[in-house]
Image 1 (cartoon, rainbow, N blue to C red):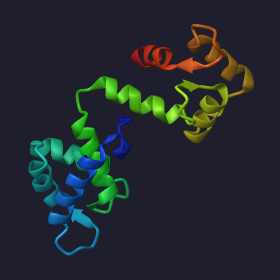
Image 2: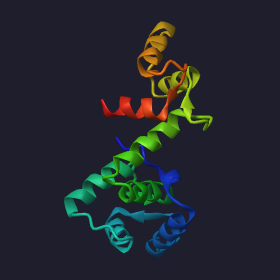
Image 3: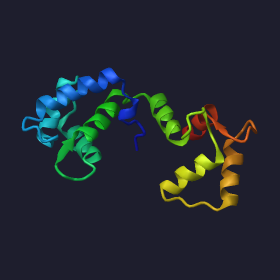
Image 4: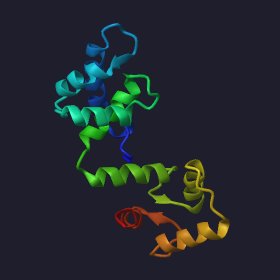
Length: 152
């Protein structure tokens, strides 16, 4: 599972990818066919094999429409941009947990994310998880602690 999203792209990258997407969205309907996706990716500088393209489409076409909308395209481009960069993956995942952007994950933020992915935890389980991850005893999980956990 990749945690990289369109939010990890710079504004300039988003504009560049929008131009490419628009070029292949010939009818202006807001989607490109999966057949056109390979052409668009090559224009963006990525060269997936036919097998990789099938896998990419299966991963990105979340609504199974057989077409890729701009949101799905941006997510794909972000993943391709940061492919092979595990540090970017960890940073993206950390941002999901660090909801207030203060550089740490509180117990409440951890609970919220766990609940949102369908992992309901009892209060004592949440406390145990925090105690295990919070190696410096600050009461919150900082980026280094999070990174260590992700490496396990």
